[in-house]
Image (cartoon, rainbow, N blue to C red; front, side):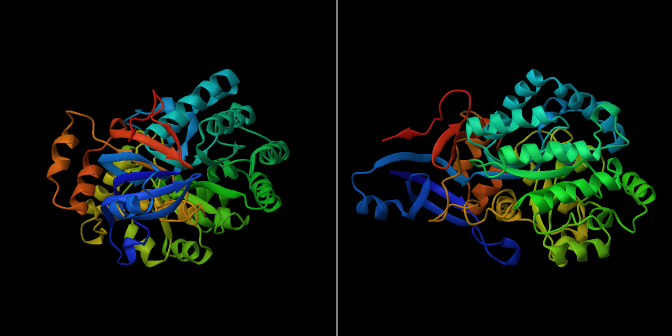
Length: 437
Ligand SMILES: [Zn+2]
């Protein structure tokens, strides 16, 4: 049993329906076996539990662990490929690196780099785009299990339009997905996701194989891309002969409440209506959208249609795994949309990076905020000494201003401790800095 003493920020209720930031400036959390048992003022909790071990986190801010709903594990070394639109970036930057994961020793190295990068960024749960190679997907699940990261992932499949070494026949794809799902789905914190890369690279037979696997594996997920880039959208409509990008998945029964679609920068009204009706979620990846020049995300139209939205870092088209900068970029994008933009507060950004992702992954009963009953998945933000954040945070005018300063300035180097299920897992270079008293 451990009593954490901290300034605690979280968003248990949705700011898009009027809720605000929940802030306990001198809070306490009692954690037993990884579960949050009590939350309240530190003084009250200490009086009730005078002999418990106290972890003093007062020199910083305690936040829920981030939930990244769209991130490509094989692309960690492809970050920084600037200057290209989507289809050129894929061909010249991402896919050559993804092909290297055919070498399982290389894949294991990348898997370790990937999971530690997420942990160090304060991400404790992720929906991960796996690899085109089954053994590389095993390497990811093994690395995540080794460190404790909660992941939902699987084999990425394509059978056209990519380089041929990333193609797979639909029959073989089903067998490999099935083997991976049987090995990993529901084991520890791992869950299986069916991952057709995108409609352009998947035949009807392959999408049918994905749909069959999704039906056969109870509780499996579907994740893929949609409506990212105008040239891509036109190509999908022509090649798939579908009335919309969404329909190219929907007609194969791949759109339901366990579906997360990345980007959706250019949706039609009909697609948004259908997404809202199905309960599928959208992973908004704002730095990737900006880096590839994909466009400005129409958050207002998603909210109006009742479509669930959370954040993704995308990596490598994005600029690294930190959801602090994704939250900030989401804010920038809405500012740039002028009168159509949704004004985002710091509480909105935290919600999008935590509870919204937990809801999209149907993990809202376990994680996403720091309420009693939830698992203790959290990060301690203690600004790097000498950094700008360390200078401005003490002068914040209240909790909302402090959180805004954090989203404006925080980087992974400011994340001093990370816990999953109450176990300290980061930062991965040395033990966490959280002291015990
Ligand atoms: Zn992506």
